[in-house]
Image (cartoon, rainbow, N blue to C red; front, side, top):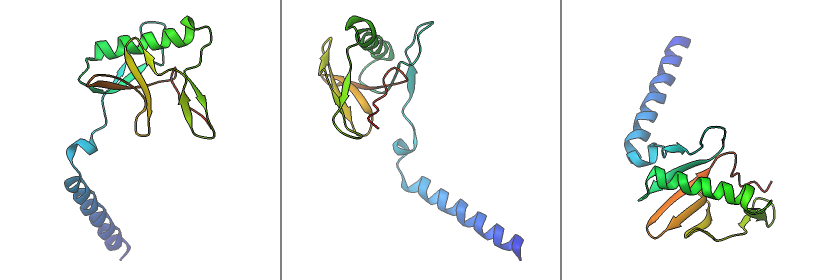
Amino acid sequence: MRAGLLAAVAALAAALATSLALALPASSLALPKLYECQHPMITGQEAYHLVDVSPATACKTVRELAAFVHNGAKGYKLYRCAGLGKPVLVISQLDGWKLQISRRYGLVMSRGGSLFAVTGTDFPLNCT
């Protein structure tokens, strides 16, 4: 009896998974491609959700942002915390790219119709 119950639960789980896969559009099932932008000896710089921008351009911009935050501004912070869980950007543009915080993607850089999200250990938005 127990084997029959397990088989019924497994069949129900498989049917539910198939139903969900058919009900959801393919784009919602796929994760955005992540591009690691670091050069040798540098880590924690990544771009993803690229829209009308090449990985080379996005990564070049991510590296420029990292250099600006770490070296060019002598400890300049990218964001400040305005309460628990509420990061607020200190700068709004860098080299013609607009910076903003998206609920879905976190740190986003855009210019015209092009945009990409920035992540990695160099760019955590953490206000906990």
